[in-house]
Length: 181
Ligand code: HQG
Image (cartoon, rainbow, N blue to C red; front, side):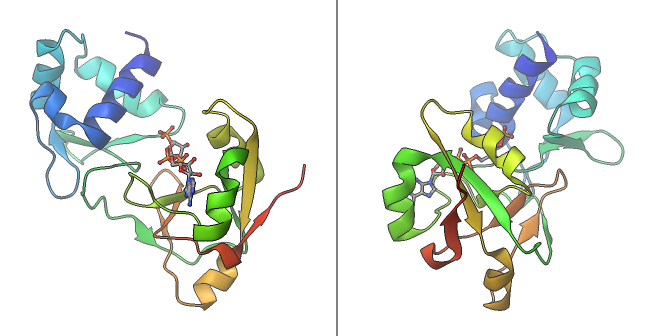
């Protein structure tokens, strides 16, 4: 398997559906490396410790982390199951960005940015990163600019995952504008 396909498979298992390989995540999203490898092999995925180590190090977005003695592994963000990966609460920069599709705008304008199936709304540090997030989907992109400084002043909390993704619970519509092309 390529590192990219290992990363995709691990994202599924470590963020959304650990049961597909018969494992569980603890309250902080960790799972035992040996059990993960066993589980992968049982469903025919040839993933061993060396492949896991390469995936953690080479992954383009640093999606996964080992614990100190490398007996456990977890995804850094993006979960749909309720685990607390302990992202740091931090003061956000003046603005943050969110890449989405044009067709979501009417609903975003009305309801704000919602976390949908994930545990948080994911926000990007710059327009370029938000464009990459939007480009994962088919359709015309739309980049939202979030007045994160105003949100922080108004008491909204922001967190940053260890791989640099900004997270919050909800972005109400009054803090959102559209980045013009
Ligand atoms: C949209 C990837 C209508 C939202 C990325 C998004 C990211 C609304 C979709 C991470 C809405 C949810 C997360 C509203 C939000 N009405 N649509 N009120 N509020 N939406 O995948 O941010 O590669 O859960 O705009 O890089 O796209 O997997 O969130 O289009 O960091 O590591 O609902 O996933 O990281 O989709 O992506 P998602 P996202 P990885």
